Image (tube, rainbow, N blue to C red):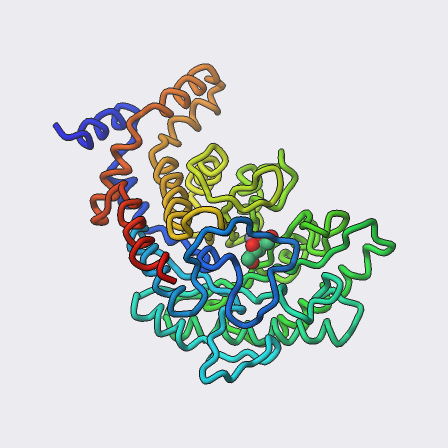
Length: 412
Ligand code: RNT
Ligand code: ZN
């Protein structure tokens, strides 16, 4: 009997069908962030990374041109099983013949190369306006700035991005998630918390006044609790973003690095699903702060996945990754993190949820604890290997990456 067959038997004793779990996982799309490949630098500006986010590390071989980034994405994606989507930021615009356009003048044509790239690979594209790493970010403010010139510049950027998102959806035939996140905030105690939020609301209203097809473009709004240098106050707080999303019928996005450390996104998912058709996630690994470490197969990642599966919401949650580690091989960081999201999903799909729910409802809390604990040591690894095998992959991706590092990355 193969290891998988044995695992299948063991899981069936728990009331779980492993083949079904593998099939379900094959249908889940993970939107993979392009910015792990170049430490969130992008191609449109020489400005260093700003917005209260930070990459640390200086591992050699990072992508510095569109071609290098595409080559690295190809390498990473060749080692990531399952369905993938490419998640781009506006700062990754590609300007031909040195014809640069500023962020408030971006057009679909500046993303033609990416569309070509995605289409050739049968992938959809998600998108993000880039409200950071740019000289028009004044005093850490964009859409909430009291300076109308600054605020308008960024409103126009948002408007351009809606059109580009629609272009992506039309070209790829797959809907595009357009995620708005602004870094705006203050390092120290502000005198006025109301007006910046008032202006942010007004700016969002202006951006969303651009007509767009709501079946093709899903606008999401990402909240945050604080950023580096923005410790005292964040304009786009959880309350702001959630209320705004509710009022305007757009989709809330939760990044699990954007809450106080004991606040868990896994616990928020069920509530959010009760009040929204769709929700969006940035899966990351905060370590003491929003440090954006590579996603591990850890408890919170598993719990997030379990919530999605238990709420029967795989088709209602836009799952994307958001982390950036410059201290290790960037391709490996990509593959490890995205595979861990998929591992967590498979792990979640291998839970006998009906049985466990019944135990909860029947107040069988002893049995519930014992079964949940016993499931932790069930032969999950063999089911994961079977999934990889069905995707013509295996658990050794590092050999290939080390070869690529020697032959490609170190020669850059
Ligand atoms: C920052 C947010 C945001 C960014 C990306 C690059 O704290 O998480 O999503 O990480 O847009
Ligand atoms: Zn994020």
